View 1 (cartoon, helix red, strand yellow):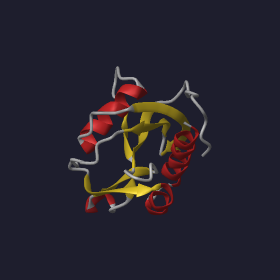
View 2 (cartoon, rainbow, N blue to C red):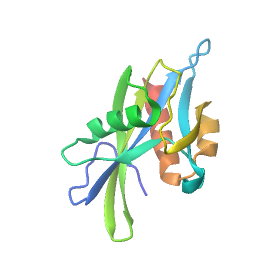
View 3 (tube, rainbow, N blue to C red):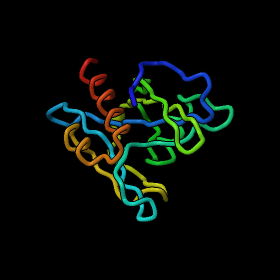
View 4 (cartoon, rainbow, N blue to C red):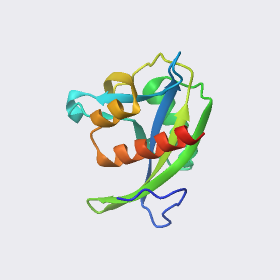
Amino acid sequence: MRLRSNELMSNATKQKVQVHLYRLEKGTGEPLFLILRRTAAKNRIWQPVTGNVEEGESPEQAALRELSEETGIRELCSCRRVGGFEFEKGNTRFYETVFVAETTQSDVTLCWEHEAHQWLPYERARALIHYESNKQGLDSAYREVKQS
């Protein structure tokens, strides 16, 4: 899988989003990334906010909806597309758009899909994230944060 900057796959059957939410740590100004732990039914893996793009919805709208549904966070300083990638699962082709979003909120309200959360520096978040595609998305998000 290779992340591509702002490229859309035209023949994708399904679209997904992954959103790397961060806040700046008081005192140091270092970004802390939010990672979520799935429930036991989903193997308790750590990941960023992820989800499907619903019919009639843009990837940007899906990113904002998924953030709200999975974290309860609605107040953002910014939300930017940082890339994307295509993959196949079974007979279905997907395109997943990767976003980075900044908030000043630290309180998280988890939905039924997750049982825990952590705000962590980049290296620690990357070490816990399960899927390589989510690690690559975090890499892109971190580069974007450091450049801005």
